[in-house]
Image 1 (spheres, rainbow, N blue to C red):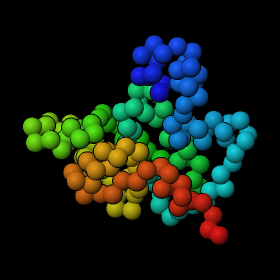
Image 2: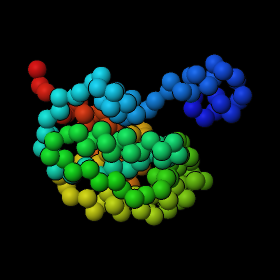
Image 3: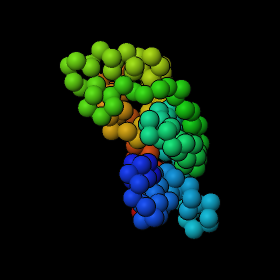
Length: 156
């Protein structure tokens, strides 16, 4: 909505929609900055979260919002994984003719970083295909930011 709709030259309605479109974390940061919403988060027991940015988050300069939202969780150190694309690109990496390319992309930086993360560390990735690539390539479960925030909400 922030890119393709504008590229289609659909005029003012598309521009208004693009300006009102936010990723989950961008919305939370916007509301928090405006003083309209404060999440009462608690520590979750994990000391570190290693975060892989999805390609669209990086392309729209939205990855910093992911890191900021996670930084609201008490006692959680947030570390971005320096990586490029996970290599999946939707179903691309599952196709037999692209599997080797997909794995080479993932092994360039993402999967080694995930494998080197301590056992108790959280692995965070918003992209569904990224989470599958991490699971299949490194044997670790990666979680969406919303799942991490859910753990940090007060019980009851």
